[in-house]
Length: 251
Length: 306
Image (tube, rainbow over all chains, first blue to last red; front, side, top):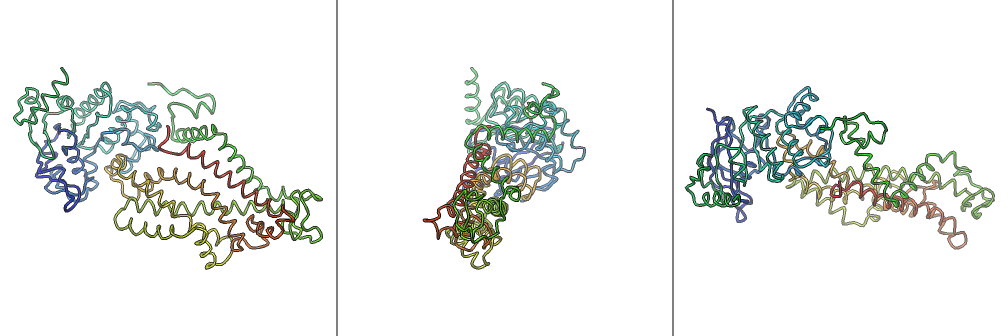
């Protein structure tokens, strides 16, 4: 099996000199094509920063990252954007407030050089469970779940191989969360996508992912399969604590 | 899913929940803005005054009772209402009412030119500085600071003195002194927008900085600029009138309002109408722009409502 994402010794920092703080320290992980990988941890543990480093949104990092066997440099190119797309945490912030759904999607399609844009937009909206009726609406005319569907449609527009999901459901209420998670699961099955999902919710990760990495203060403390996680077979005390507290919240 | 039904009236078409074309979505959002604007009576007063002045300016040749440049020394300084002179005559016997109508053309011409040049300059400089950051930001903003450090009228006076008197140069001078605040606003807006998720998302689609600035940042900056420009219009008209008053704007015999006040000030105590009537015109247009600007804020402010 080929590796979709391969990261070794990734360190990401903000600030320089005395003000430098390392947000991510020496993280290594590899995700096979078609797999779904979860990254969990509390706020500030650096899990989202890993995604931002992959996408090139934070410039200061060291280590090595490979996507589909191509090493990543300082700049991302068109091939990268065609292979890797991201869904953001807050659907209220990730859509341009003055652009209709149609404008958002057609711009993405044009940037990737697709033709036949009208039909593609209709198909994308169909794929994420929105009808044609939503095509010419503005974000303020949509609910949170509908916005997140639009954001997913935009991420799917270039027909990527890898989706980076940055807590895609944490801003939504519970019933909508389930719909979005099911949509993501279906899309992965249909298209053979690779997911790298960041979440603080162990239930969501357990539902979606085959493998889970636990992060604490910028370091990866444990890597375990989802079966082990369900069986509570964690070795690191922090992971045990996380699992324990998430179980207690359910009971 | 509700299917879009065939709308029966224009209003229903504009307020449809599910627009069926780009054109309809855009028209609907304009219509929503118009409804907000219309709900504010003060704004509507401003808009009505403005439309009235614009109509007067366009129809000046039809509405004018006299030739604005025709002198009649036998009928100089006659009071309002004298022998068909609605607002009286000035020191050379010219009809003030007709001059006022033609003067509206000059005022609107100045306003339009300044409104096209200054905000555009400010928008480009501000958004480039804000988005590029680093050295570009430092250099552009220090230039802006230098311009901001001078009092507006003094700087405009210096420009006009250097370029020569005349309306075109007055417009240029006003534009050159008016852009720094717009650059500041545009930069501040850009700084808040540039780190938002929707900019990150479009970067991940492979959009370059040119496209991001012009397609994604400009539309969000323009609303706050439009508000500021409408509110500044009064100041721009007053600066233009001030330059005219000082003899550096429109040149005689041009019926520019500021120049008319300047001519009338010599007779202010004995023949009050010569200076007062163009003064009232400047007051009316300034007030109209201020009222309209206030209403525009309600419609365009991206942070409010929706």
